[in-house]
Image (cartoon, rainbow, N blue to C red; front, top):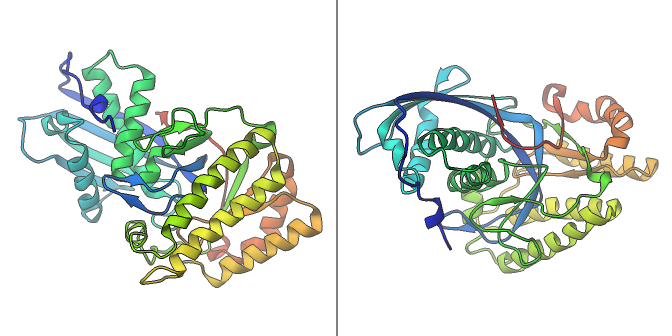
Length: 359
């Protein structure tokens, strides 16, 4: 794999002090990836909707200093110093040092905040790491003004991936593929790419209501879960299935077969959790109210000939997906019927977005 293209070129400019702020979104995978090899290489390709309202806003203040052997940074999350988060970010900086050697030249103050609860099954690492990557690339663009927007986004996705695989899908939108796939032009294991084909109009401005069933810390980290795929008895079959499903959903997204979309997306969500339940050790991240919501969605879909469906990440929260044309009716259903299964009746209305946004 050609990673040399991402090594920082000689810096033409000198930057003594700078500050950059980026808002980057979370994303929700429709075809999931579960299982990876080092360094953050997916065992199968995945595709996601980029979200709009669920995002992280990160500011990094850079100040030039004497070059050191370790990366010097302080981290603040929602206004408070968060030393507990520092090891993960320090590991990220270690992974990217070959590609961004300038990080040793600066003292960095990182301030970050989420529009949604941290570590609750919404991909906070995806939005958080992609925001840091975009801030770094803003500095690199000042050091090397010859970089194009395309090069900046591509490298930001590459860097974000080294911190969190799903973060590679949060730089652009509305749909992003990560992982090499023979039927997706330009796809790569190293970075995410925008879905390269024309989306059918039914998928424009698609809605995603996130039902917060459990806002607490996840029982099992995604890293642990991915590692359990190494010895999983069904792993190879799952990787094949996922790549086959990506071929299918590529056609669906172009031809607008929304019934097939509903079936495939829900199957993918349940398969992801089935892999968790059949690993060793096994674990269950769904809660009783997760299942209540799923059954209510199925009842509503049948009774109203609706195209509502659900998907899940590695947690208890439910992403309710539906076309914009059904927005008013489905929102009423969520408020009257589904909100009672949410922790403190909390949910987030979201929709498909278009990626990172400089503030």
